[in-house]
Length: 184
Image (cartoon, rainbow, N blue to C red; front, side, top):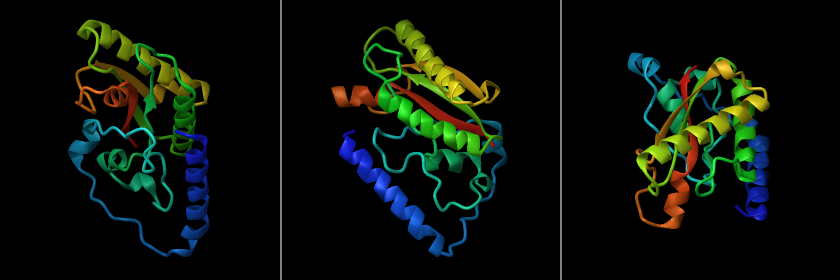
């Protein structure tokens, strides 16, 4: 994402924060599902640069929503990786810093970090790489003050692609550490 786009997104967020308190809307009411509390929601990846990721502006009591709704809203951003790498890129560190802030704001939440890879390489290799990616995300969140007891990891390797086209941009979307809220 270009520097200009980041600045534009930040300016838009500031504008929303300035205007939103004037709105007197009621937070949406949802009924908690007993099955949602016992099992993690299905993976919902947030594409790189998605404006919907990582914001809870104007949501009222965020944790009044069920876990599936929290994950659908995309409060936590994915960390994307380069090909054959488990090293966090600067954009991934920035996304995870935002995620750490959200997790600190809601200290009762627990998360699952899924390690994902693109379709290239063997199943065994990609499972190991996905594990290293999930661990890198977990370790970085811990370095930012997120209690490790709240975090679990799993590797799916190349088994759960977000994008299925045979293009480099699609491969990039699949190389990620994806976070799901599992408890609130």
